[in-house]
Amino acid sequence: MSRETALVTADWVEEHLGDSNIVLVEVDEDTEAYDKGHIPGAIKLDWKKDLQDGVRHDFISKDRLEALLSEKGISNDDTIVLYGGNNNWFAAYAYWYLTYYGHTNLRLLDGGRKKWELDSRELTDEVPTRAATTYVAQEPNNAIRAFRDEVIEAIGTKNLIDVRSPDEFAGRLLAPAHLPQEAAQIGGHIPTAGNVPWSKAANDDGTFKSDEELAALYADAGLDTSKDTIAYCRIGERSSHTWFVLNEILGYPNVKNYDGSWSEYGSLRGVPVALGDEPGEA
Amino acid sequence: MCGAVKGGPSLDGVDVANQAVIQGVVTRDGEPVGNAYVRLLDRTGEFTAEVPTSATGQFRFFAGPGDWTVRTLAPRAQSVDHSVRAAKGVVAEVAVAV
Image 1 (tube, rainbow over the protein chains, first blue to last red):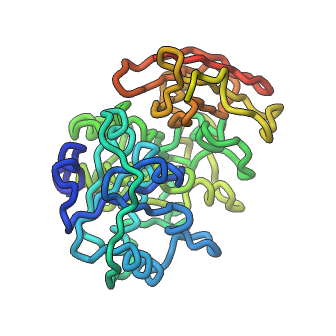
Image 2: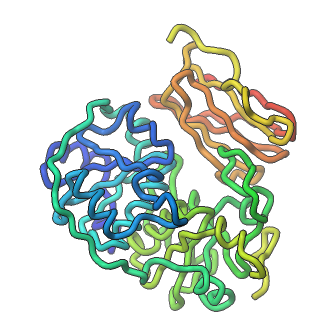
């Protein structure tokens, strides 16, 4: 994987509007953003309603994904170009999630919705119709997904990267500052995790920094590329952004996203927790 | 939209006593800017949160007590920084002109 195979620019998307085998998909946390205007031809995936199970604390199963993509008119050989708000957090989450279920032709629009808007590029409220397909997903690829027991075992042995803001890492905040601070779980981080906020990988306009800047960022944070790496945040979307950087742009092997993240870990009984700005001891 | 409203979005239904709110409105020549992005940077300049403005140009953050920077990005404009102090139970209003 590399920048060339994983990312496309806004110019590239404009040049390929209307290509029949390219499907633009907007994925947002604010699911009304699409309705207020989207890139021409783009369809919408609702991060919560479409991609979360709704009963179990998990994302949807292979069967439901197949039904969803078939209904949306996406084929196995289509190139899916994902973009969204929040600096592509939820689009990166969808990218990771679709990779988990084996879709191969995936791209992320560099800069996402914000870059598109700041460039004053065209938005439309016209919703496209696509004929239904028969989408077949692959078996889950757990090489890119970490679960809680593996995370606990990784303390002091693997690279753990906490990609939340420094205040969340230290335990001073429980959620990003645009959400009410009313979460019930404790604050802090997984001991030995380094704090590399996802935002350090992006420019103000939401585009990713250069390969050289990105490699230096994680090297300076002590990431040992000879070890496996697990990234986490609060609910697994910002860490998808970092998984994308490490796995898809920089091409590092053995990078997992812990999508349970702090909302799960910080609610577990009896697991070690570190407070403050330092990684803490194993 | 005819002219900008004053201040951030309505706080009806928000328990302000337990929050350190930073909010405001982004305007250009007195008119609200509904397609701006406002980001909140902590005391070290590190990104903490970002929201798009509403159709009425408004934005809101639930911060923690302390010193923050509000950075506004809008189409065809330079980014603008404002320093703001947040405190629990207080609503800090920021007026941003781009």
